[in-house]
Length: 297
Image 1 (cartoon, one colour):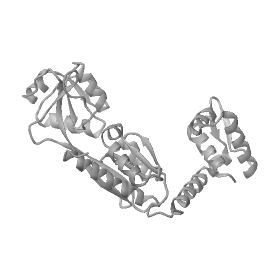
Image 2 (cartoon, helix red, strand yellow; image 1 turned 90 degrees about the vertical axis):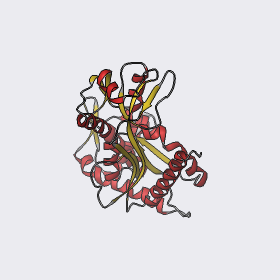
Image 3 (spheres, helix red, strand yellow; image 1 turned 45 degrees about the horizontal axis):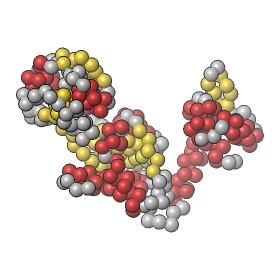
Image 4 (cartoon, helix red, strand yellow; image 1 turned 90 degrees about the horizontal axis):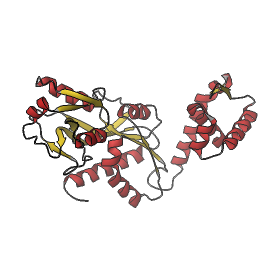
């Protein structure tokens, strides 16, 4: 049985479409169908069927799906263990939030590829909540995310990389030297209260008994920063180093204490075959962030 064909089957089921699976694997739809037919012949049963506009697993397909994924994971682990180097073979499957991708990962990647040019990294963007689940389930080796407000399981390991205090964000030309008065008088762009940073901001305002005039509510720090720069309001956001400062951008103003902070961490599975890769990347990430804080490249 060709494991590539098994991977194609898993991708078709996950994506629900032969065309989507073909795009994902950089194949033609005809090639995907050919792989599925060969796999059907190998196992002696039809594994997928078309249902309306989607492709769904048959009864036989559902029965083997979990075991198929275990076989693929096992083959990947085997390739990682069969390494002549100090570290397992890659690739390292790394998740990261969009903000982490733009503000933290670049320096660590430069260090990584200067030290380990033959170990590739696959990066999957996503939300902190989704990435946490992906690491917990073993689908990702590690993820850079906003640290959850609960204790992580014992089979997972973490390293805090950065603390990000909340700051008042205003259009560049607006005086925010009195941040509390600014929050009371200016239209407010609310950081989505369903995510941790938004809840921290909301709790801070409630603690000061400030009820801002909410004009918009959305997720996405950079998107909010852009709206603030266009004069649509002010906001409370974690200090991420991704916002454009100065003319045509925004200004950042410190808040009166106690100022809440969100913590950005890298999280990985403790006992996985590629745990040494995750630990090494975590160390490089921490070192590059420390160098950036100290003004070194």
